[in-house]
Structure formats: C-alpha cells, structure tokens
Length: 126
Length: 142
Image 1 (tube, chains in turn purple, cyan):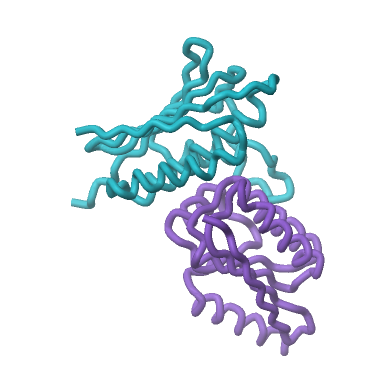
Image 2: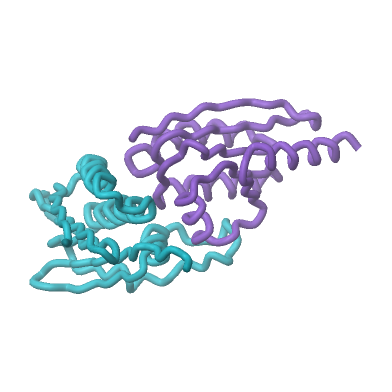
C-alpha cells in the first residue's frame, strides 16, 4: 500500500504556525522517502506544534519510527512540540514498545487533541 | 489442520512489498489476527532488509525464504537466508528510557520484533541463518 500525506497549516495566536501532517497507508522502507521529502521542509519551517494524524496509517516499521525520532529531535531543538493523534491499535503498540517519548503527547482522538490545543492557546493569550 | 505458505524473496529491496502483500492476503483470507498480520509484515521487512543490506558481498542473486504456518495456537514465521552469519538476538536492546537525541538509531526493527512476538529464535544451520518468530493467538478473557 502506498503512502499519501496531506499538510494542513494553522496559524496560532502566538504568531507561530501549527502544522498537521495526515498520513494514509503504509510507512515502511518503500514509502519512507515520500515521507522524508515532506517532513524535511516541514521541520525547516520550525512549526510551533507538529501534529501527526495517524488515523489512516495502517503500518509503520522501524524506518518510519526513525523519521518520527528525527522530527522529535528537531522540534525539541527549537522549542517546538510534537503530538500524535488517532493511532490504530497496532501502531499504538509500536509506540508503546519504543518507550515513553519525552515531550511528545499522544492523543486518543481529535477531541482530546483539540481540548489540549485550546488550553495551550489560552495560555498564549494570557 | 496446519496451513502453510512459502515465499521466496529475491535479494532486492523492490521484492519486499510484493512479498508482504502476498503474506497479508494469505493471512487475511485465513482470518489471522491483525496482530499476527502486522508482525508477519514487520518480520519480512525488517529481516529481509537487514539481510539485503549486510548479508552479501557478492552481486549474484540470492533468495530469502519465508515460511508461514498457521495452527490452532497461532502463527509461526521462519525466515532463512544464505547470507553472512548474523544473529539478530545478539543485538543489545535499545535503552528506550534515554532522551530521544541520545538514542542509537540501529536495532529498532529487531527490538520491535522481539517485543511484539511471543518467541523469537535464531539458528545457523547448513550455512544459513534461520530466524523463527511465534505469535500466539490471544486468549479471550475468561
């Protein structure tokens, strides 16, 4: 199964930008270059918050996990955040095995993510 | 009765997705659990990729053999190759408590296979590496 990626940009009240990357399909050796090609410019734009929506991601291998690590490292380097939302059960198991990732939040669904973002945006406005 | 699938993967990266599609289709037709299907795909990709990358010095064609057996208790997957001797179980487990920027990049795939399977073994037999992985059917809670 191929991988398709959509990007959504959301300006946030702090003047920065939140970016959501929605992945659909398989993230493995045969598709990781497609992901990397989208991820590199996204990280270069230094988003305040980088959100991966994985609702339609069926499969991830270590090649894909390494890219998530790269994203976390680079976001951390400039004080940005990374979140993952809507993980399917097998993907969730992979994330759990990889250990709790500091500075990374995993949300069950969009409602939970939205609630978090709303609280964070309020904190910008104060 | 046990059911068995045999696949042969040529030692090129391009051959892996097709092998995974065949394995997935065969397993899904037999109502294997999503966890077993995921593990089979992961095992084929991670182990065949390692073998193609590091297993051979020559440029001749080699084949990686995959056997999947479904029984009443679960799935057994055996991958064998004629590459250099390599025991994936000798790799140290990555320290998943380290901060992300201090983690080594290698060994993640093998770590995933070890943790997602119920049993993983390695043997070197007749000049071949042989890795077998077992995924037991999950017992329904009583």
